[in-house]
Length: 320
Ligand code: SER
Image (cartoon, rainbow, N blue to C red; front, side, top):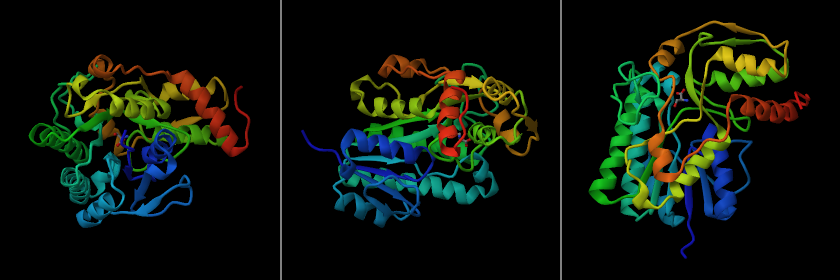
């Protein structure tokens, strides 16, 4: 069997950092090249190169030199940061993705992973149990770029036979890495404040329900989708993916079961409008049917795990 050589783009990001480690466990450290636009002190040991995926020639050179057979393209400007400079965000998100698609085709890359998002949905989509084929009229530039990106994935698959696979990630929560520039980031920050014993000022209203997923489930979903037999995949834009749904008030209450003194104040900012335009919960039945998706963590199970790991990091025993 041919040994895979894997390229991770955006390997220092919130998902990229954890996914790189999981891929190295599965495929061998030396077969997974981590790349990012800048080096990170906290990066996992293993091959690393600086790469700006907007530079198509540089991307192509790396893919050839490393004889890359799979690409995970995780670099993007997320929802909140994208609204600060929409044309820059669009340009970065689309240029890098079109470079990945073209380079993959030119070099015979066998499989490509593209992360999409609940941000593809806008206020016109059904809010509860949003279906796979809901109307996609997003109100953020991040969402627009993900709708376009999904359609480019589908196009390359049907026109050229490129094996592109994609998930619409909900908000992702993990203790290993920090999120940046997203609307769901509060659900990570809140745990850090709680464990440090500090009050948290939440930038969303207490009752804002959003779809979320714990990092181990997100990584497992990604690996399971990428390992699924191609003929089982009926969605080549991007699969709806769900884990749990909660509001800031609910995650605060879940934390308070272990840290009863934890306090949250609510000070909604511009991100509230973005959150209000997104689904509250997601119907992921196609993922369950096609490749056996099944989340393992609910809110309380995630809270226990987050508090335990962050407790270790900050030297504070929580729960138990
Ligand atoms: N977590 C992302 C964001 O908030 C959604 O994909 O932008």
